[in-house]
Image (cartoon, rainbow, N blue to C red; front, side, top):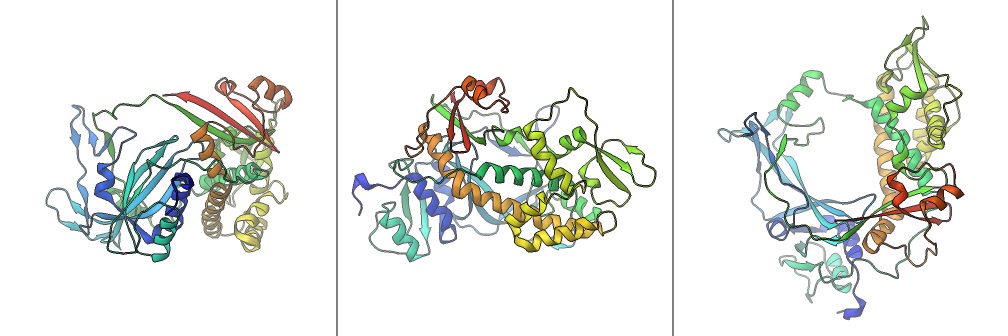
Length: 448
């Protein structure tokens, strides 16, 4: 067993749980007993005018009575040292009134649904769950946890429940290596802009489902992907005593754009910079939205901006991708992003449909964009997990940059004077800023 001074960190434990989640199940009952809720509890239903709770006409029922739940995923906050664990259990829908099972909805069997529960393990750099009671199905994973000192048992036994303590571990390893951020922001920004465009284009698009099916799913509190979505309302109880402490929010940007929050939503930017018109008549149409992209009856053009209207670096970045997507330029911006996330095949598929915009089948374009949306999300998450989350977690726990990043903190005034393209809000003037290579890391502290 490892000596006390050689203890691995909570971050390293979380990575093991994430990478080996299919070999570990969590005792849900003990987790709930050991859990400090971070927000007001929500109940299924809604409140009437007298504030009485009206419960849904359906509820869920566990298919099994096991105390254990599978790990669906571990989710990391983009801007703070917060980690959530998402657990899943198999459930079925039953009528609230008489517990009659609901087996079929909209022509689909719904007798084997999943319900997800989210628990915060680490909240803004503070351990929120002191320990986890787990069973392990893989001897290899057992030995990995044993070797790093997270469990104390000598012998693997898949029947046994092991206790993994978090409250006796350091949050981070001060000597860990953190990869460079060069090029990270630019890729995440491009993916964010294109993902926003595609999401706006795909809004309310559910291939294979007719409107009557969507309505039937909604009536039964099911999403088009068969996730259970009951209405919820706040319970009138307290979160509990909040311990006074300092927490940190972290942003990553470059020398022209301070962080990803500076980008506009796709339809907001579209309305600000573009006009839509009928191909035959040239008539300008009101309220352009990206849902109309690919419609053979319409076309796009850029708005003529007044001389007083300044094009920011955010505008210029977004405009290049928008112009390519809308067919106003053939600058290769969209194909380049698709090559990152889906290889040449996705890029070629896009180019074929791009050249046929206005004449191609819109359903084919929707199918391509559905594939692209999933791949964009997957690729962005890969970047976050490999290059952003470890650093954000370290800074969020300590309030400082790792020693290997030898950068001096500067004020908002110094930052703005050196990089005048950055647009700092009033709130952002309270931050500390670090120039690391081509990137700028912003840290904002708040007292709770």
